[in-house]
Length: 386
Image 1 (cartoon, one colour):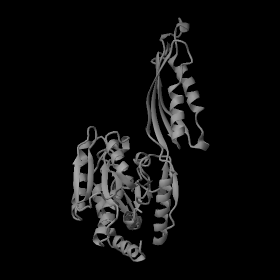
Image 2 (cartoon, one colour):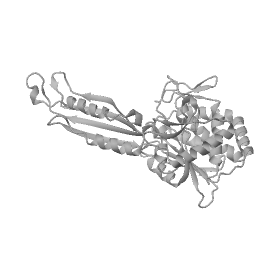
Image 3 (cartoon, helix red, strand yellow):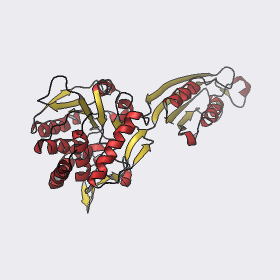
C-alpha cells in the first residue's frame, strides 16, 4: 500500500475520533445480554443506519435461541469477487440494569468505562469507521468486505456457528476486532480450544451407620475421577483440565447415591483436543455398582498458529510498522469465533481497542487507541488479497 494512502487513512480516523467514540458510547448505552434476545435488534438498526450511509445493504436473520444475526455488504460488487469477513458480536455478559448499577458508562481522562465497551462494542464501531474511512477516501478493496455480527458469542455461538463457518469457508481472510490483549495491545494469532463437560455419577444410597457396606458412594467415585482429570493437566503444553463445580449427596448420614462435576478444558492443538476428549469419555467408575454419564465436549476448536494465520500476521505487522506501531502477537487462553474461522481461512484476532477488564466491573478502553486501531483495520481491509 502506498504511503500516501496510509497517511490519508490515519488522518481520516484521527479526524473521526470523536465520532468513533460517540458511536461506541451509543452502542454501549444499549444493554444486550446474550439471553435477553429482544435487546439486540436495536444494535442491528444502528449498524444498518451507519453502513447504509456508505452504500452497504444490510440483512437480519432471526435466531433460533439468540438475538439473531446481522449481515452487511457493499451494494456494488463485482461478480465472482473474492470476499473478506469482518466478524464481531453484539452480545455481552452483563445483566440488564448494569448501566444504572455497578458498571455505568463514564469517561475518566482517556479511559472510557462501560458494560461491553471492551468486549466488544468498541470493535463494532471500529468496523463501521474503518469502512467509512475507505469509502470517504475512495479506496476500493480488492477483497469485498462483508460484515457479520452475531449475538450469542458469549455462550458458545451455537446459533451462529453454521453461518460463521459458511462465510469463513468462502473468505480469503477473516478480520476480528475483538479486544486486544490488554494494555499491551497485542494481537491474537492463536487461541486455545475450549471444552465443557458434565460428569454425573450414580451410586447407591445406604444408611451410613446401620449398613454402610450396602452403599456405593458416588462422591468417592467422583473424587477418584477428579484425580484422573487432574492428571491430564500439562501446563507446559498448554493443556488445562479444571473441575470448577462439584455437587453430591443429600445428608451426612447417607451414603451418597449421586454426584456431579462441571469441567472446563483448554487445549492448544487439535491433537490434544482429541486426546483429552477420548480420555474423559473413557473414564470408568472406581467402585463396583457405580455408573458414569458424560456429556459435553470440545465446543470451540483451537485457533492454531497456522501458516495462513502467520502470513496474515506478517501483513498486519508490516502495516503497523508503516503506521509507526510496534505490534506484538500472543496466544490467548480465551476463545472467540476466530476459533471456528481459523480452520477455514487465515484469521487475525484481537484487532480491537486497547483496554482491559473484560467481563469485570472495571471494563474499559483507552480512547486514544480507537483512531489508530481503526486505521489499522481499514488498511488491512484495503490490503490486496494477492
